[in-house]
Length: 355
Image (tube, rainbow, N blue to C red; front, top):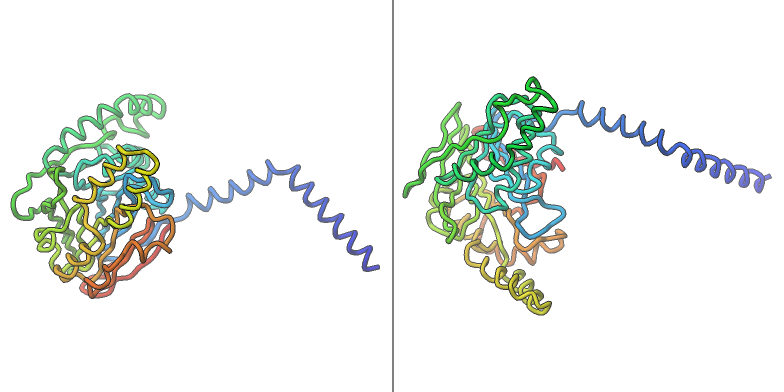
C-alpha cells in the first residue's frame, strides 16, 4: 500500500513537471505580468522632512559588477540633486524607484569620464519619464559648458529619433538634453544655490592635475552632508566639512592597489601598471579620509569611489586598514543602494537599503 502511494506521488510529480515544462511560456507571461504590475504600481522610498543621502554609485573606473560609477542623490524636503553621474548610476536610481523626473539638477565635482559617463541615461529618463519641457540642469565649475555642449551634440541624433517616434506630447522637443549652469570658484567656498531652506556650497579640492575639481556641502534644517568628489587630503576640505553630520569621501587603499600593480607587471601589462601607480597621489586613503573626518569633527564617514574594486565585504577590513584609529566616529564602507536619513534638528542618522 505504501509502495503504491509512493509510486502514485512520483507519477504525479512527473506529470506536474511535464505540464510545467509544456506551459513554460504561459507561466512566464503570467509571472512577468504580475511582476510588472507590482514594479510600476509600487512607490519608491518615502523621505520624510530632513536631509537624505542615497548612494546610487560607489565604484570607480575599475570594473565592479556590484557597484555603479560615482553617483549620489541628495534629498532635502521636496528638492533633490544628483552629485556626479557615473555609469550605472541612473540605472540604480531607476531600480530604487527614485523620482528621476522630479530631480532639480545635477552637480558635477569634476569632468573625469567616470563622473559624467552616466549623464546620457539620466537625462533620457528625466526627459521621457517626466515629459520635461526644459533640459536637465547640470551645475559645475567653469568648463561645464564645453562638457554639456559636447553631450548635447553627441545625443542630438538620438533625440531626433525619439521625438519622431513618440511625438512632442510625450517627449517635448524643448525638454531633451542638458543645460549647463556654470559657477566660478574662488579661494573660499561659494554658494551655488540657496532655496527653500537648502544651501549648497562648492569648495575647491586637490585632485591635480584635474582642475577645476570641487566638493559640495549641503545644509538643510540643521543637518549637513559633505561630498568630497575625488580629493587628496587637504585642510580646505576639512574646513569646508567642519561640523557636518556625514562626510562622503573617496577612498583608495594603497596597499591593495600595490598588489594590483604587481599583478599587472607580472602579467606584462606595464602601461596599465603605470596608471595604477599614478592614481595613488590624487585620492585619499581610508586612513587619510579618517584623519580629515576627525579634523572636521563630523559624526560619520562614508567611503565611496572605492579603489580597488571590492567583490566581497570580507575585504573591508583590509581596505580600511588603520582608518578606525584615526576617527572617533562611525566609518561606513559605502554600497550601492544605501540610504542615510538625517531628521531635522536632530543628531540621529537613520540607515536603510534600497537595492
